[in-house]
Image (cartoon, rainbow, N blue to C red; front, side, top):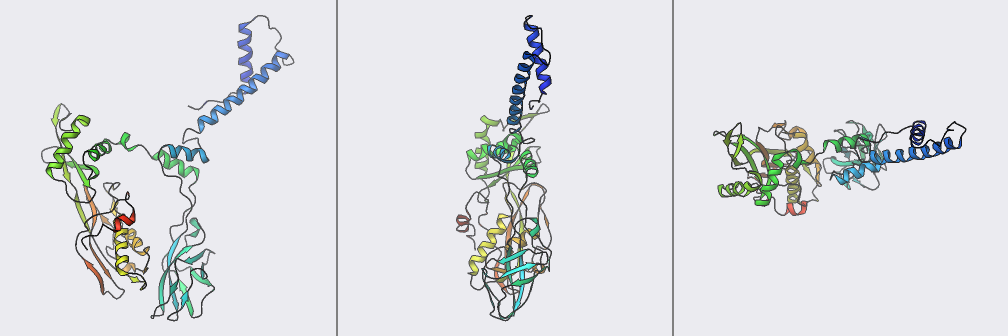
Length: 398
């Protein structure tokens, strides 16, 4: 509870009452008396101390802290710093004579609302007389999110330029996270080990077996035992021996092998994850100056990163538009038409299952296959590894 601020008059009255109760040698406490003046000065100082104390206390709690004090609370609780503003991005369809070159440092595109955009890299129009190039907004914030078909102006246009427009809205622009939004995020963040027993079990299992990545609820088996699903860091199944070892070695910490509920004993069982295969098939326009195999690897990395198995919650779904945007944001990818992107709808993930890329087919804009791979990815990505390390190991089956 934060200290309540008392008025100077109230503090002065308290001071005088205490003084009069302690001695009978004081008789004149009128407003004009010296003692009243002393009482006023002491009370004014006491009030200032109370104010300072209340301010310090207010800085300790998310509900009342602000500015840098709120930042310090987040830091001490291990919460990510407040989000800074970001710009938006989209793809432009650029029409020009074949071979027309656009310099990323010189050419600027503008929306009807006055938002400026620049190319992420130099762009050359192909033999078809048009192409798709990624642009980022110059300005940050939500105002940089503009509607489709509104980026139609250009400055420093090269010779041969004909027209430009954005077939898709520019998205991704966000404002700085203000105190209210940051405060809400801090209050919603709680210690996982204190909130969730399964998270604690997960930590114990990780110490027993370094292959453990995640533990989550798995329902109840046919014998009435509570099931926990255990996911490994490489996506491979655990053996019965490994499961038995986890249970036996965790007994001293958790008494897992025999728990009591409603006066009847029941045991805990462990099982391997059941994967929901996600098949990906799409058309893409690639920059010929990029290595196709590198683009393919980066796309598969980006898609795998969408499925963060450490935090996937029961009832979540695979959103196809997130997969589409992940592919579009890869360097060397000029354009991905959403009409030919599959899956074309969100995928509901059944309870106690996790999604995983199963097949991967990449085609050119005419539908000709660039890569057709129906093998399951050997390893999967989770964000405690550097991307570079992941790229060297994740797709060993291709």
